[in-house]
Image (cartoon, rainbow, N blue to C red; front, top):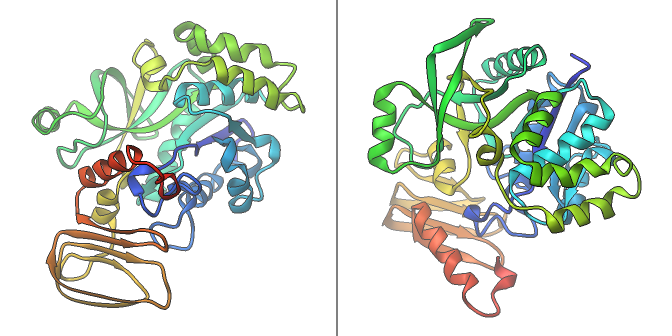
Length: 365
């Protein structure tokens, strides 16, 4: 393992689209939604610790989730759990980790990864990330990972690549980035797929600390000016108070918009390993093992008959779940909430919007 390779896991989201299983008190990254015995956060740690020194892994999360991180990843040192007092999107998250880690090892090259991805082709994934880390350590490029699209997906962002400006490293192609596009409509996503120039934006980034620090300061001085003053506070008892003050003044902005869309140093490694951004129930349904009728059933004692293309989840080990005679529904039974709705992401989003507008329902969110 390379002593200058590090991983920063972003684990601060609230996972609202996995309601009612995911709650503000225990969001999706801390849940075993796939039923494999490991949470999203733990699976992400396992994945990266196979080729990055375990003591070189950092987790950035919300202050309220500190104990959950300690519970699920007790091997992570306190100094490597970075606590954000407020939600400020991914650019402040990256800036905080960059400036703190720069105090520990200014020669570090890092992979920044969300905590909620599903990776199927682990070997190809590992080869791609290691190759990108080695290349980033020898260049001033900011790399992301582009996944070859298999369908006109509207829930992912896209990266347009310049194949005329490319380089092959260890048999893996990297290209200069032309454009970034947020989630397109169905018609545009189809055009993207047909051109062969667009790849799914995985949300993973690889760069040297020196390069990202320079580009943060060039592209987002309003953010970096706040974190630059922490050299004397990082890794001391004063860090928490310093970060509290920084986040009070820090704008909310994504690293994609704040840096990657502005820099001239954006490159992408092209990959086709099995990948999914498990951001919704529908994405889990698509990746899950289903019965012959297309149902995703996770219940201790199920009786399912004449049901098709539905999601049925109940965590109670003693409850009999009887389901009969319906199609395309989602039924999720929690101790305090029973969700029954059509199986689509928009329905859950609309339900959450309705809940936030009603009185006395905060305990259900």
